[in-house]
Amino acid sequence: MSVLLFTIIVLLGAFVAGLVGSLTGLGGGVIIIPLLTLVLGVDIHYAIGASIISVIATSSGSAAAYVKEGITNIRIGMFLEIATTISAIIGAVITVFINPSYIAIIFGVILLFSAIMMVRKKVDHSDNDTSGKLAVFLKLNGSYPTDKGMQNYAVHNVAGGFFMMFVAGIISGLLGIGSGALKVIAMDNIMRIPFKVSTTTSNFMMGVTAAASAIVYLHRGQIDPGIAMPVALGVLTGATVGSKILVKTKTDKLKIIFAVVVAFLALQMIYNGLTGKL
Image (cartoon, rainbow, N blue to C red; front, top):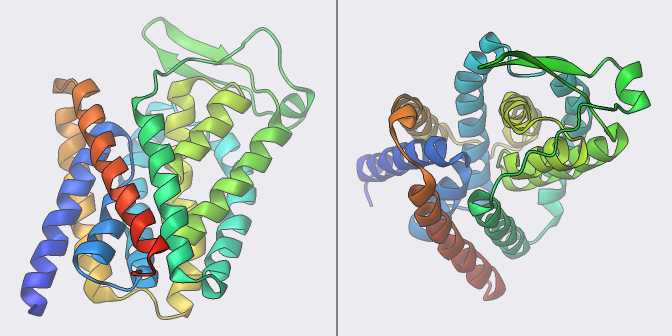
């Protein structure tokens, strides 16, 4: 395959990943890594390196809008980034010592989990009547704009959320994805932060987490500009287009279709990992 054809395929695949990902709330890495490894035969470590760059690009682009609207809780994001940044570096270092087949299997399992989370009915777990003592001490409680004005919310179980973020960071550094599903679980289910605040704060954090692990991959020479550049451009362009048509599109059926595709890719990754093809 020529370099030009390879670049065009990666660019188009990344555009689709960014477009559909922005409509369904899932990062582009879930499509990019299977595309590079299963279809184009790229070493999984280089595929992860390219995916990390795409996570930084998309997070930087979309997070700014939510911060400007006042939905993102920057204080919570920066506090939890202590856990995800440290663990993302640990996860990136661990990849050196793990057989690529095992990484493919873990990636497939995480993909299946992400597909289930995508179609699962969202339930608001927020509880504004009480607040955790640690949350009060760290001044993590906040408010966000709604149709009825500013809505105050309280934060709970800070220690539990911090531990879950540590797990999310390891997965992010190990697999080159944003771990958005795990971060939302930490903030929505464990810390009982309103879902809208959880998702936007998770988006804000993903780029910072990915940047930490990117340093390790860059040091090992596993971020190839020839792969990372078309991936970043394609995902960023697709995500930008997707965000503009999001308000006019009903995404329920699209999420189900995308979840089926992701589940199929997950099974492919697990199969190739178990048979030693990756």
